[in-house]
Amino acid sequence: MDWGLKNRLARIIKPQDRRGVMLAVDHGYFLGPTEKLEEPRKTIAPLLSLADSLMLTRGVLRTSVDANFPVPVVLRVSGGASIIGKDLSNEKITTSVKEAIRLNVSALAMSIFVGAPHEHESLVSLGNLVNEGEEYGIPVLAVTAVGKELEKRDARYLGLACRIASEFGAHLVKTYYCENFEKVVNSCPVPVIIAGGPKLATELDALKLTHDAIEAGAAGVDMGRNIWQSDYPVAMIKAVRAIVHQNATVKEAQEIFNKLKDVKKAVKAASSA
Image (cartoon, rainbow, N blue to C red; front, top):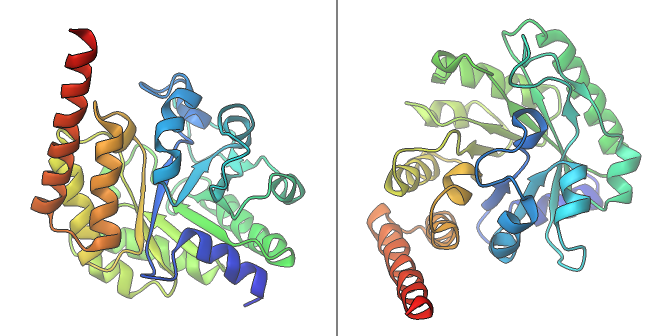
């Protein structure tokens, strides 16, 4: 593996513990103005220093991220379908590697749709993106998307999708947590990052998801809605970081969250008094 590619990967998966906390803010590329991400700059700014990397589109990067802050960027380069369309799997590469180089990104990200109508196109696109990315020393994160078919999120399906992504040359894979997740991790020869997925009922549920995934061998999280849709997003990302980087238990992480939440409440109460 080329030095530049290794160096970029080390910005995302930290070499100290081989783990990373990625903040996902790319939802608008198919969901539009998602709740609490209507104004991306306001959502991102307080979390920027707490994320190991950001996953987002070039539009949000240019308009909503401070260029003076040295956060590693995982650039989503696929798209072409929306939540109101007929088929979310009908994606293509929408951003060039030359553009990614101009934006000084650390990795490229695209979705693959194993078992969906456009499976073939997405897998061929992944292979082509890996070819081009490696030419310039830029790693590729494959997102094993399943669209609206939530029932497919089991170890057999996700293990298949992750293994195929790695076989096509992806340097990292992002997937969903599931029962028997260790089978997914063990059968994938590249680091596996878990997606936070839709907003869970409570912060405790999201912390448990993070802990269980890390215990099963995940190399980190790419979490979005379960952080910035929380009423206390800074407290939430710090609690997630404690699990990922400090091996905190769910109880310890919840205590971190509650303590920071109480401080925030007290400051807010004092300022409105």
